[in-house]
Image 1: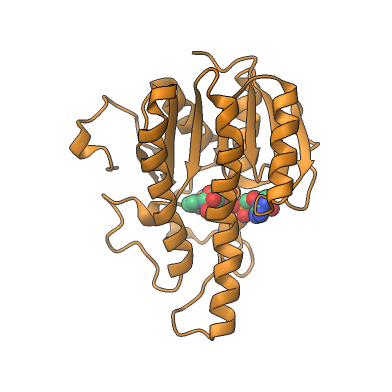
Image 2 (image 1 turned 30 degrees about the vertical axis):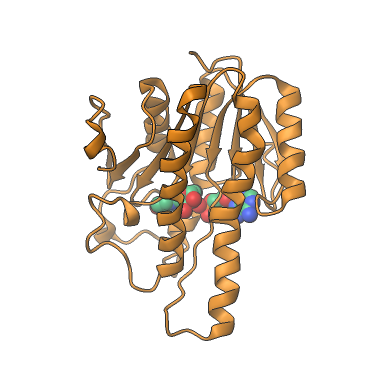
Length: 251
Ligand SMILES: NC(=O)c1ccc[n+]([C@@H]2O[C@H](COP(=O)([O-])OP(=O)(O)OC[C@H]3O[C@@H](n4cnc5c(N)ncnc54)[C@H](O)[C@@H]3O)[C@@H](O)[C@H]2O)c1
């Protein structure tokens, strides 16, 4: 079923990957509602912008009500995410405050936004895309989990659990749920890892938000569900045949 003419919601749409998703969905003919925590997303032609915090229930309900008034919701991109280094030996105060900072956005925000949107998707199917990470792509993660980003990684492992469970539960309604577990992609979050915001050569080829937005469209058009699709440096993977069930969570 085509998504053209339908409504798409993108969280964290002001910058980085979220901006790439919003632009691509506009070019696919969607009416896009893009929101972000501090900035209004008014500079992307075709996007209706909102300032909203995905970790606040009242903001989430307001955004979804507005999107539903725009038309039939067909796509939800759970993109907003937060990242922080928190070694396990850090202070209790730091660890518990980072827990709230990361989990409230990366998990509770995804849960609330999805719960609010799903009743609207049920009338005609739809697609949920969760932004996970290559760190936690089960088939490829060996050796790629940085030891001091355990809270971020834990949030994304748990997100994979949402993807898996919701895909199974919502299959009867024709709703697909997939995860994008990509590696380094040029964005303020990635640049923020380096002191001067410059990407070091040893990082190799870095993907661009539009590469990942293309991967999202391949996933939507494939009709596949319950998968965590990986994309490593420079080249998103080609989406092939649907694998047998026992191989679904692979890269
Ligand atoms: N860039 C990468 O290399 C990379 C790799 C793997 C996974 N990811 C994931 O992809 C997603 C997008 O990452 P990015 O690199 O574009 O990040 P980014 O920080 O550059 O952009 C994220 C956007 O989300 C917004 N945001 C943060 N918290 C929010 C909240 N509570 N409510 C609403 N908006 C909020 C930010 O203001 C920002 O505009 C994240 O979930 C991230 O974990 C990114």
